[in-house]
Image (tube, helix red, strand yellow):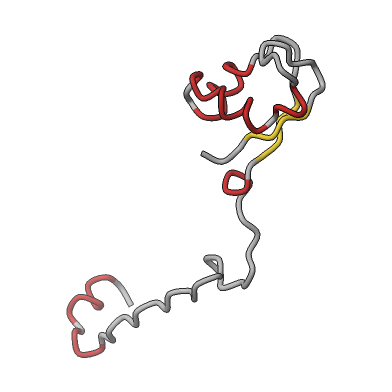
Length: 96
């Protein structure tokens, strides 16, 4: 059947059935208890040479001024001076 046949045989058309929406608490495929994306639950980041909290914030959030949120979530790891992060430290990047 070609395009012309399809356009001229209107009597054979069938209406399109609406798609069922997935139930609440399921992912796109209908799987229950789907794992949340990393961005929704927070992620971890390992500090590398040359990093600062503002550089990490700029890279992950698009705004260097959000370094405070990273510091607040990691005070126990970083300590009292937010300028003294160390290579190899694993930081939690909170969901904003």
